[in-house]
Length: 499
Ligand SMILES: C[S@@+](CC[C@H](N)C(=O)[O-])C[C@H]1O[C@@H](n2cnc3c(N)ncnc32)[C@H](O)[C@@H]1O
Ligand code: SF4
Image (cartoon, rainbow, N blue to C red; front, side, top):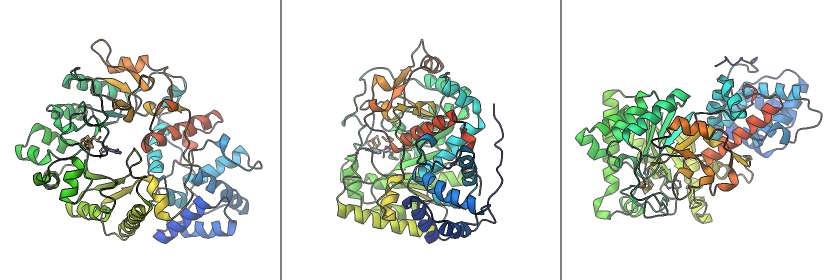
């Protein structure tokens, strides 16, 4: 069932495109002040073309706006709201925020830490607002199919040995030897059942290097046929060979929707050292040639495939961030993700290394704003923005006791273990406590979902929560707690209207 979202009364005058300095200054105001002085707020609203009703509304907004910006996922019951504010007034402020040019522009910009989460919240809250039955089923512990599904099609097989990677077989990954992995037909059935249950996206993200699976072309095609949006992560090492052979796998990549190549250095020798291959093999050049061919073929055939680069900052590459942005632009990719690692390698950079890193990131952000990168998108890890802004304080992201990530985005390992998330479907992090069930000849995916509907999972059983999953858990927490006091998903302040 789906309902139209009622459009609130617009509170904006004509949208004015603010300068980047204005966005940064407003972000600082919203995130660093506990309460905004009405005259300063009035000035900021004018800058963004926002309107307010009267002086009382201005005072209310001066109180609620920083609370939302600094605690975007905190349920109303835990917000430090002034006792004079009634629920009706809060709802009024939330509604105003939904159609505020200022809040949307600032909180979805790369001047607001957690902007990736806020952008994600648009889809997440939008899905919930469109489909009230989905939230009802969550509350009643009815069987649910996640909107997004991560699939690990290989069991640690990889031709690289990236220094920071936990998941290739020589590092901590402990895949189960000769045990049979899911077949092409098994995956076909999973995708069909997933799509029937409401899954929209299939993400080929882990388990080693997916492109080393010989029947991956068929597996991707099945996901496509089931109507799923297909996303693929790869080290890119096989692209050139596959394209020369024009293999079925290569054609299926061209038919996919999104593909990101992990490319952690722009220097041939550093790259070879990082992936643990002999320098004389020049593995970086091979990846770059493969990417060029893929981009050329995509353009020649007019395919909608989005192609990107993922760059995990670490000791060997913290000074090559500007270079990777340059290479991404030269190649003509659609997006560059500059990311932190998930085991504190980026955080363990020395202060001097971090300064070199943040200086480059600030420069890239400036160039991005000045149109130097054209249509190419560059995303920075949420955690980097606070440092780029030179702030001490970051907005708070809630960490609830219960993990509900699997209700929105779960994962299946190569043997058919359905896990709460991508991370715990990798053997190094896998635990029974975070497993929904096992796909087998007797029990298909739909049955596993049905049988696990009542299972509850604790965040304390998870050794390391990734930022994307933290964001989903925090959003679930706010939505479910607020729903108990009558604030439904369509009333959430972070569900911004179109500008
Ligand atoms: C495990 S890999 C699997 C797919 C493929 N082999 C690849 O390298 O893209 C999935 C993603 O995790 C990233 N990755 C590896 N080790 C990481 C770490 N310690 N922290 C964060 N991301 C990591 C990779 O760069 C890649 O983007
Ligand atoms: S290519 Fe991917 S799976 Fe292989 S070692 Fe590197 S990060 Fe890990």
